[in-house]
Each structure stands twice: as structure tokens, then as C-alpha cells.
Amino acid sequence: MTLWFVFALMTAAAIFAVLWPLGRGTRPSSDGREATVYKDQLAEIDRDVASGLIGAPEAEAARVEISRRLLAAADSERAPAIRPNLKWRRVAAVAALVGLPILAVATYLPLGSPRLGDFPLAMRTRAPDRNQSLDNLVAQVEQHLEKNPTDGRGWNVLAPVLARLGRYDDAVRAFRNSITYNGESAERRSDLGEAIAAAAGGVVTAQAKAEFERAIALNADDVKANYFLGLAAEQDGRTADAGSIWRAMLTKAPADAPWRPLLQEALARIGGAPAPALSDDTMAAARNMSEGDRGAMIRGMVDRLATRLKQNGDDVEGWLRLVRAYMVMGDREKAQNALTDARQAVANDAERLRQLNEGLKNLGLDG
Image 1 (tube, rainbow, N blue to C red):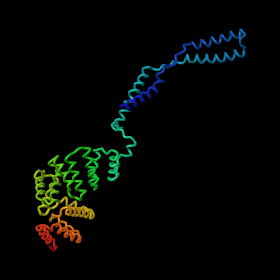
Image 2 (image 1 turned 135 degrees about the vertical axis):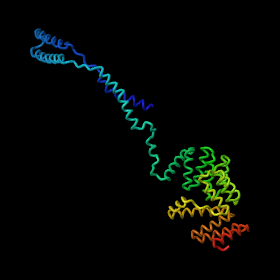
Image 3 (image 1 turned 180 degrees about the vertical axis):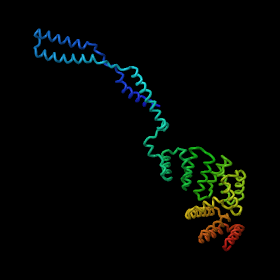
Image 4 (image 1 turned 45 degrees about the vertical axis):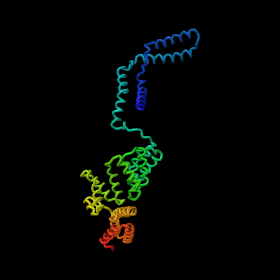
């Protein structure tokens, strides 16, 4: 508001500076008084010559100068007096004082940006560029948070981006700061637990499990927390508990819930039944992948499975899937090493050892 007042004051000052000369009165007419004065001066010169006060040459020069002035005065008296019309001066003043600002505002409102906030030059250099890479943008946010570590909104935005970039340890720290400065919620607790599990190679550690349990305490229906608690039960060898958790989720889930296929596949996995066929859309997406992307996706899944089995070696079906994956990938040496590790893991459990040997026979390997 102060800025607009300053602009209005400057406009008024400029208009008054232009109108001031037009508003000044004209010089009043002499009404013949000036010519009378000059005539008296001529008569006085004659008296001075007669008295001997001045010489004839000086008197003649004075008469010439006064006569010139007398003629000029007579001409000005005969010229018509030009008097400015007061009415039109007032019209011009009103038009300048009111019309010009109205015209300026009417032009600025559609063409300018009256609602644009202040944006100093120093801030423009830090404005996001659409051509910048995601890594550069993340680096800028991290620099901002180093200077403003209590900016909860910044941590809330940064944490999931770090997780998508695979920087799980940094994501864990960011999620913790988000909870510290934004407050606790089921979503933030489950996101933190997921990041901890991802940092551990897909294993739901005790620390991750504790975060999921805190999320459940805040919201018993939190989907992510319930799923990962079921996954923790599966990794601990408590497949019955895992199945109970996932079946309860499916019972409550809407028919169009996007995570239903994930639960159905998980239930099929712990039940020993083959996983349901992928949808046509998923198959089409896989076919559209480049060979390198498809191979990287498969290797990542296999590596996570191998890591999980090192933490929990009681999952016979998991060992069989790992051996089968290595064989499909053509890496027979890793398949043989996985077979050896599997037998060592279940060596003290006769039933699991028997299940493992039977499964290996079906894969074409000796039991």
C-alpha cells in the first residue's frame, strides 16, 4: 500500500509541474500609463536643454531612446489582449489529475502483474530451473535444510525423494527429522519403517518393525504398516501369522484397491501355490522394457531375496525360488552355492530338509 501511495504522489507532482505554468495569470495591461510616462520624459528633456543641464547631442540621443520605447508601448496597447479561458484551464487540470492515473491503472491491470509478490534479485538466482536434474534440485533442498534444520516442510518433501533415489540411509534421517518437526502420524511412521527396511536390503529389522507397530498404534488400518508387519512375520518363519494379517487386510480392502494383487501374491507365496499370472498391462510394460532394465530389475529382486534368506534361512520355498532364479539367469555356480547354503540352513530340521530335497528334484537337481 505504501508503494502505491508513493507512485500516486510522484504522479501528482509531475502533473502539477506541467500545469503550474498554464495556471499563472497574464501580465496586466498598462492601460496607456506607460505611454504617458514616456511623453513626460520627452517634455522633461526639452526643459533640461532649455535650462542648460544637458547638451544638445545627449538630449538628442535620449529623445531617440525614449521615442523607441514610446512606439513599442503604443503598439502593445493597440494589440488585442489574450486572456486565457479559466474554464478550459480547469478542464485540462482535471483531465490530467484524474484521467491520466485512471488510464494508467486501466492499462496496467490487464497487462501487468499487480498481484505478483516481491521477488528480489538474490532469490531469482535460486529459483528452480526446469532443465535442472533431480539430483541438483535435491542438493539445493539439502543446502537449504543445512541452514534451516527445523524446516519440517522441507524434510517432509525431501524424504520420499531420497527414498526413490535409493539413498535409504539419508531417507531414514530425513523421515526422522520430518517426524521431529512436523509431528507424529501413522503415515510418517510407516514411511520411516519402509526406509529402514529398504536400507537393510528388504529385511524388516527390529527397528523397522518397531516403527510399523507405532504406525498401527496411531492407525490400525494403515496399509503399509500392516503389510510390512506381515512381511516381518514371514521373514521370521511365522507364515501363519503373516497369512492372518494379509487375509484380514484383503477382507477390509475395497474391490479396486491397487494393493490387492500384492497381497494375493504374498498369500500365494506363503501357501506354496504359484503366484497369480501377471495382468496384461504388467506384461506389456515388461515387454517394453529394454534388456538392460529388465535384467537389472530381475537381479535386484534376486539379490533382495538372497539377503532375506541370509537373515532367515528357514524359508524352504524362498530357497527354492532363489535356486530356480539363478538357474534361469544361467548362473549355475550361484545356484550351487545357494543350494549349499539352503541345506546348511535347514540341516537341523528334518522336515524342512526333506521339503528342500524334494523341491530340488523337481528342479532337475539331485536331492
